[in-house]
Image 1 (tube, rainbow, N blue to C red):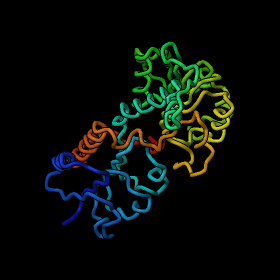
Image 2: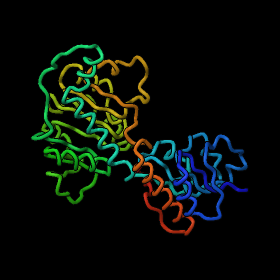
Image 3: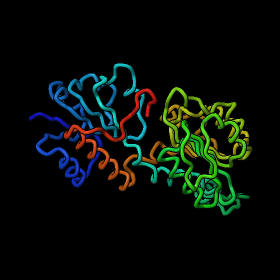
Image 4: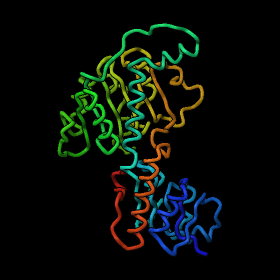
Length: 318
């Protein structure tokens, strides 16, 4: 039987039922594309999930690629990777609460020195690590005000921080945001912020955005948080900034390179906290459910010939 829809990410039985209800009478395949023959691959019309770059040329019958990620890897945007007739959609909007809470945890760990106290605990030492910093009364700058950046900004505002934001295009300022500007104002706003949160896609405009010069514009003792793409930050410059004390620290769920190689000096810098790109994914059940909902909705739209949601602009990269 023809396998017309391939689901590449893990699903529960309830998730299977949700997806199958959107395309009744269609054969689903749940698993890895690498296990299918070339004939079977050529018959797949829709892929839900993130196939490897090596699989793309074999999906000759593909009409819909619905990613399970909010970000879009470069392999899907490379010239010729996907024919113009293939709809490319992402799962933006599924990850905001999970990633925002994860990054808030990293920030609290840094400014309250919890990582140092954990080290003391493991060493069996009862010791005081000194002054801490508060969120209340602070200033936060959110760079990239999509779903993730907005969810983080709302939480910081609720905790008493004055939150500003910059985005690529002008927009309506929400009530929780004290100031909203476009990217041209980034350098002007950086020196004012105690905490800088990055939630940016990887595009030519964002690669290396926080280079040595821009990191140097940040307020002394500030904290950098990155939940977008590691390529936005100059890794060596960040190591120098935190290592020298110019920045209090950094909380990173993404790095450049990624994975961060064993032995890289960033691992040993006390006030750089690193998690291995796990703030999103399928770790929070509500996020997993939302990804399935987005995939199911676009699957229904595909079967009914309706416009897609979460359609990626291939020129912009998101």
